[in-house]
Structures are given as C-alpha cells and as structure tokens.
Length: 418
Image (tube, rainbow, N blue to C red; front, side, top):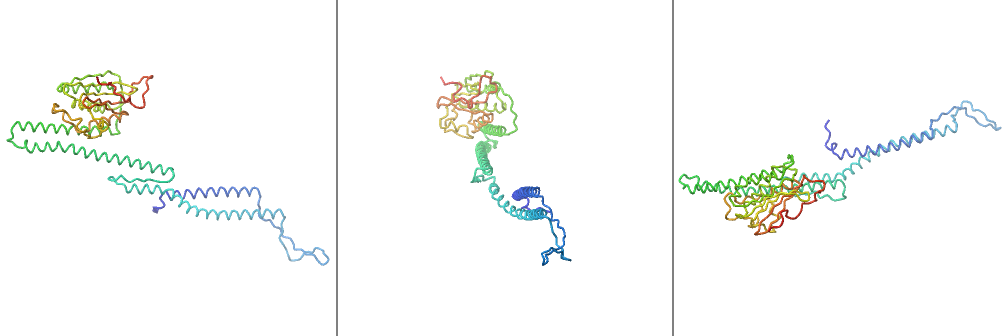
C-alpha cells in the first residue's frame, strides 16, 4: 500500500511523536494513581449472604417471614465493595479520557508542529525560487534567535558567499574574454593582411610574425595564470615543507638572461633558514610573477633586489625594483584581477618585446597563493622611486623562544631606500 505524501512529512511524524509521548505520560500518571489507590484501599467485590426476611409482630417479637429472603453483608465488606466500584469507574473514565486526549493531542500537535516548521517551509520556498543566475533572494527570518533562525541566517550567509563567488566568476570570465580578444584580433589582422599573401615583402612578414608571436605569448601567459589560479583553488592539495631560499634562488636563475638584457643589477639576499608548509610549485609561481613584474617595469641599468628572511615568526620574500612606482590610491587595488593602474605601471619605451604589459592576473595570483598559505602580500611603493612587494608566510622553522605575532609586521623588511 502506498503511503500518502502527508504521512511522510516531518510534521506528521512530529505530531505522532508528540501525541504518543503525551498519552504515554498520561497513562503512566493515571496508572500510578490507580495502582496506588488499589494498594491502599484493598478493594474487593461485594460478597453477600442470603438470610430470611424478618418482621416484628404485634407483641414486638422478631418473627421470620416464610418464603421471603434478603441478601446481607458485613459493613467492612460493603466498604471494600464501594472502593472496588470507585476504582472500576476510575479505570473506565480514564480510558475514555485518554482516548479523547489522544484525538485532541493529534490536532494540537499538528498545529504546533506546523507553527514550528513554518521557517523551514519559508527556507524551502526561497530555495526553490533561487536560480543559478539570480542569487539575490534572502530568507531573512524574523522572530527569536532560536535554532531555526540560526539555520536561516546561515543559509543567508551561504547565499551571500555564493553570490559573491558567482559575480567574481562572471567578472573573471568577462575580463579573461576581453584580454584574449585583443591578441586574437591582432593575430587575425596580421594573418589576413600580411601572412596570408604570398607577395608580402619579407620585412613586413617578419614584423607580422613578431607581432603574432607576442600576441601568442600574451595569451599563453594568461592561460597559465588562469590554470595556476584554478589549481591553487582546488582542495586536492597536499602541502609539504618548502625551503624559501631554494625556490627563490631557482626563480632568480631563470631570470638571469632577461635581467642581463635589461642591464639590471640583481642583489640577492637568499640566506637559508625560513621554511614554510605549502605547495612549492605555487610559491614558485608567486615569486616568478613578482620577478616578471619587477624586470618588466624596472628602469634599464637600475638595481633589483631579491631577498628572504624571517621576522616575528613570519617568513618573507621581498622583490624590490626601481621602477615608476604605484600611486597610493592604487596600492590596495593593484592586487585585483585585471586591474589597470592609471598609467603608473606602464612599461617604459626601452622595454623589449618580451616585456609587454601582461594581463592583470599576476599580482592577483600572488595574493591568492599567499592567502591560501595562511599569509598575505604587502606593497611599499613611492611614485618615481620604485616598489617593494613582500610575501609574508607563517615560518615553520621557529625556535622555542620565538612566538609568531597574530599578524605580519607592517614595515618593509628591506628597510628604507637610501
């Protein structure tokens, strides 16, 4: 037999549970009263005896009336019989009362459970109205701060986070599409105008090939940044001990040729020591992004400093350049995805073709990697002087006499510029 839908609801189960508990308590109470009275009163059914009926004659003498009989009993037996009848009535009326109470409790339990579950119905209705393209609806429960109110507030907080995530995702897709559209248009224009024609002069063909190559490199870097961002967001990471000196030294070695081409004087302060728990490839990616940014924007022949260290229980990686610097208004926003500072981070005219301005994901990925490791990234910059980027990470190589401060230090670990 198929169970009706109303009988499968939590409301129905709560009603039955409420009624069953109420009836069980009532039966326990009435049963206790019944058996207590029975033990105290010692009730017994009436045990009458049959005797002849008598009368007084005219002389006042007691005479037996032949053929007439009556039933008689002792006074104590009559009292026990009265108690017996009283308990029988109590049992009968109690059973009838419990039956009526069960019916009333069903109606009361149905009403009470409906009121108690009203916020749940509201949560359900709101969840049904929410779609993947519109997460602006909120439950906004009112009333006492009970468990259901906490549930509604928790769901609202979850919807707020989901809406923020979806907005950020759509913004990322829009920005990435915009960044990819430009190099694709460059490639298409050069192919149609130059490379597709056999009679194109070799100088124009070489120039078009170089432009297509730069556009492809730009798209490649953007795709690599997107992959790095998605990879670090994945929960399937296994962190291990990472020596910051090792990964920073490897990154510096890869940029030796580019720094030599720009005639940059690289100062390394990579003494071994700081060890953090994390993903080595992700941290290496963060250092690469900072170095690429510094090499690309530093003035030719200037000094570029790459250093690591530990302070107040926090390990740090610092990259300092002598580039154009960043305005104070842009310092907080420079780590946003695809953010373009108002001309303050444009590469100088002397930057070679390999240093074309990248799509704005590099610094955003640096911040994401730092925060996913329990750290942060900081910027100290001055227009016309240069910038210092610092990645702060929890240091695992702490000694017993050093305790980590709640937050990384706010000053530049490389000190002021001379």
